[in-house]
Image 1: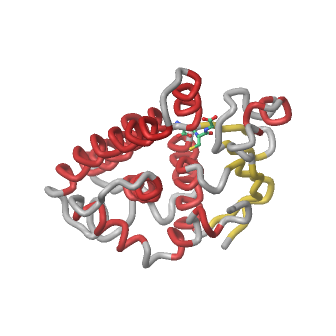
Image 2: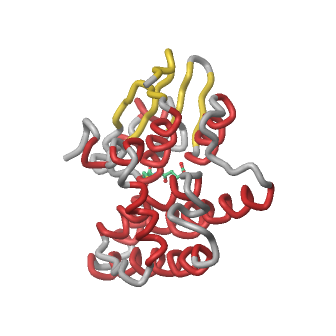
Length: 215
Ligand SMILES: N[C@@H](CCC(=O)N[C@@H](CS)C(=O)NCC(=O)O)C(=O)O
């Protein structure tokens, strides 16, 4: 594991977006200093963190004067700075498909189940059960789209025998789906990715339960 000298990753053990960056770092054989922002305690909204990342979200990446938000931007940055092993396939079409799958997770599933959205639903009087149903609904809707797409692609990963950005996004979303009690039995290709990933240290070391701030 090569430590990137001044780099700091701000994260939270259960943040699926930070989980994506942890996997990417692991696949590259890289590490950074970790700082933990306790999202449940609201540390992301405190001035101490807002002064670092005004958006008040994790993950956040700093390397000296270079600052970067958004997990996909951080992962693509790491992929360009440290090209081996590549996290995107070589063929243009394959790269586009991998990005398509990653974006279903990052744009269509994750944002509507994010903590601040669920907190806003609490303010609007939505019950615990209804909020859980809300999260499951959007995970199922996105997973159906992903599963259909994956059915036409070779496994065991999203696109062939090497993990890519698609797997980096899908695996943390599977963790989140299990947390919300989604029945995953229908998604055989997604489960295949989950099993193939579980054989790789980069994925297991990034699991929420293995992080120093895990509760
Ligand atoms: N699109 C952003 C999403 C970042 C994000 O929403 N992170 C969540 C944790 S997974 C967060 O910080 N939530 C804090 C909150 O909702 O207050 C990314 O991919 O980095």
